[in-house]
Length: 115
Length: 116
Image 1 (cartoon, rainbow over the protein chains, first blue to last red):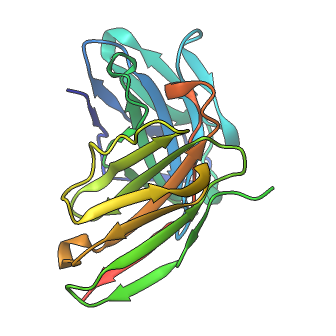
Image 2 (cartoon, chains in turn cyan, purple; image 1 turned 60 degrees about the vertical axis):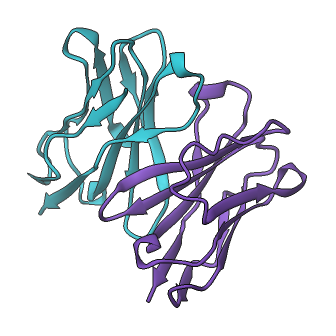
């Protein structure tokens, strides 16, 4: 079975500080990995994804994530937080060996940016 | 360009009534997904359509839930005899269908369903 754990349901950072949102997966086979962002009263928007190749993935709005197989992690980072980054962030996986194409989501992390 | 649209944006119904939720995917996208977002269960997959293939219904929580996709485009999710635990935001997503699991899924704004 696949599962995704996001450590910290709420994270607060000061404007200009580093953003680090944690995601770990549980799977014997490396999954495809995704980070989505949800702004208030909006749908989900893809920030970035890892499927194959380079393990450091750059996404929109200055976010990046690194796939670390040895740590079964895909943590999301941004060097300097902006007020506009305040939102809920979801890590998600798809296990390529199952043939399924649906996303399996973590429980989300709500990011608050303090001015 | 036009994204995924869903209607209605909000739906309030009484327990026991049937509801229909609509999703218009991005034009040309052959894959369509329904997900549900609730406080108790988080974001969970419901059903997946790909072209003319039989849908993957493995996420539907009970036989009160059904979905269809007419003409390979618009999809309707129907919940019969609604229960209070059905209250949630129902999200629709579509993807090009060209790269399978690695395709980006584009989400609509959702329909917020409240069952009284």
